[in-house]
Image 1: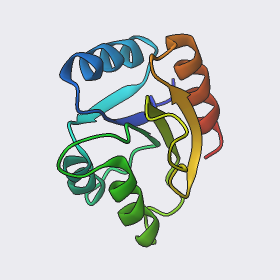
Image 2: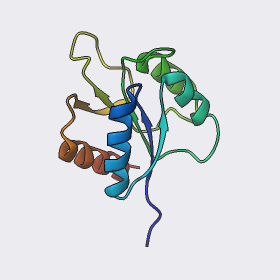
Image 3: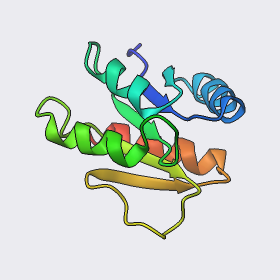
Length: 122
């Protein structure tokens, strides 16, 4: 049996974070969480490297846009698959390097399928 894919879930709303963590765990993913971009950045700087990141864009402390800027400037992280999960809409362009998007409110089936596809690209 293979090791489950490790997903870093970056979401500032605790209820959403807990719901998505529980769903992804039930779907067979190993999940770590971060409540903002700064916590996610600190987590990404130590092993093990996640197989994918689920990223909200609108967060306090450090936004998803700011986190993506740091990720793309770090040669170890530049190819890390990132899926944006956000209700931000199309008012701003997506950060460079995003592999896929899932709009809020989240369709859990779409999230699972998107994440499975993105992790499979590694």
